[in-house]
Length: 123
Image (cartoon, one colour):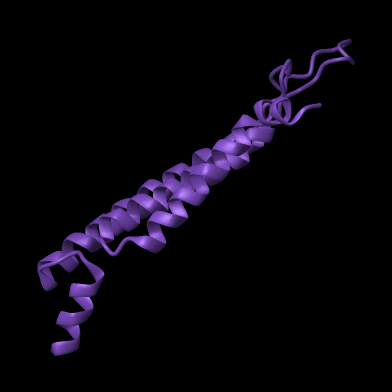
């Protein structure tokens, strides 16, 4: 198998790697709290994709066992169920983070980390 065929066959893993690296870069390089939360969401989305990628089997059927059908290939529903739970937790965590950013902005007058640290250091 050539390199190009290998890359196109596993494109979902390459997208996962791109999202993970870009989310990590945004978290590390930005001092704005909202941009940091966006970076964390990108990183979290890459983890969802990483879990969902092996969950679907091409040609797989829903996991309903039918008598006499011994040759069926079943898709695993467990990753999808786990990711639904993770999405709900992720949305709640993001909402809490945004609420904290609003409260920090009210208390310190900024959402830039450097300015917040400087203002808290003076007090």
